[in-house]
Figure 1 (tube, rainbow, N blue to C red):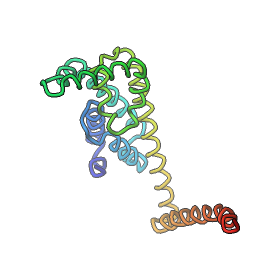
Figure 2 (cartoon, rainbow, N blue to C red):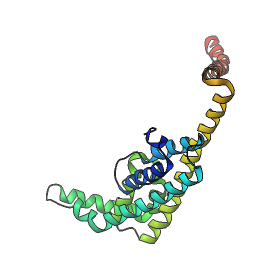
Figure 3 (cartoon, rainbow, N blue to C red):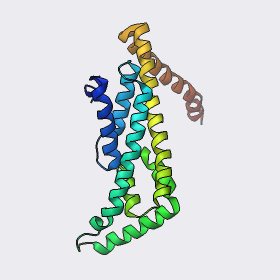
Figure 4 (cartoon, helix red, strand yellow):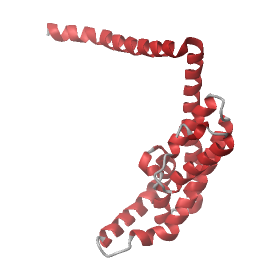
Length: 202
């Protein structure tokens, strides 16, 4: 995927849009990973981080609304198709209706942060006939916060790593990482030493 985002921006921005759109609409494709890779490319100067965020936000919101529409129009019939286990599947739908009635806003907004829920929650909201206005509002809230958080986190990590490589070189950066890990291990052992001494005396 990183090779895809090293291509010209005329290709990478549409690729980012369609990957995030497809995942939000219900396909198990790497939408979140594409945001991270695009943001890392922006940290290297290949792309613009405001455009990356804007493209991903638009794709996330549009994709989820397409998934909601599909779930509302066809999802219930598809879910209840066939006779095997039909009553059990109907009970699941009833339970889903009650859950979304009570926790719909949290499910739609928070579902962005869970890998499987990210590409299923819009369909579930449509299948269970969550009111569209409520879905649109909380989907937008979840989409914006998810994209901005993931995108800016990757961007700043990439920017700091690029600055460290420029200042110290790749070997120096690796040495710094090893030193930080070693310091963390030493600190943890030092904090546990008094407790181990008490345990030995006991």
